[in-house]
Image (tube, rainbow, N blue to C red; front, side):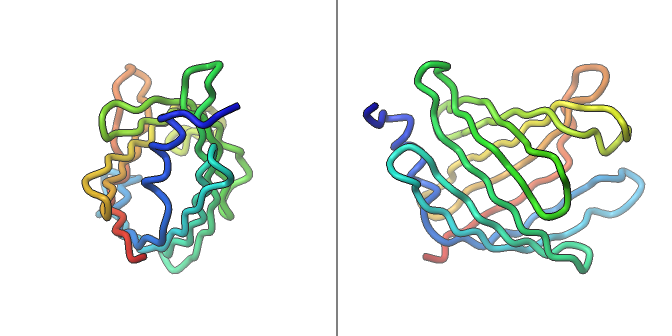
Length: 155
């Protein structure tokens, strides 16, 4: 298999990043601010591996994300695991212009014991800035954004 332009698109993530995010998990409470760092590297020419550490509410969360492109599915695919949950998130998505949208199914934090669809959106603003947002699909089919942030390249 030879890498494609879709695989090359992922190289924009390579580097070291700082991030600042706001999470709004409870509409009756103010947003939670989080700060973190991410190191991103290519695994061969097909996968980007993002390793993150984030501080929130006095706790440090570590996470690892993989993103690649499956030529047979004609979709971006990936995984996410972190130190705060036991769920293996499996992504599928697409790129439109400078925006990567990944969708996954996981535990519904708004309704424990059920699953929900999630959407993570990465918008490349420049070579050194990526805007990030996450949303959950509500019962009526609409999407509710619960996290917004910005990652800035430091190296």
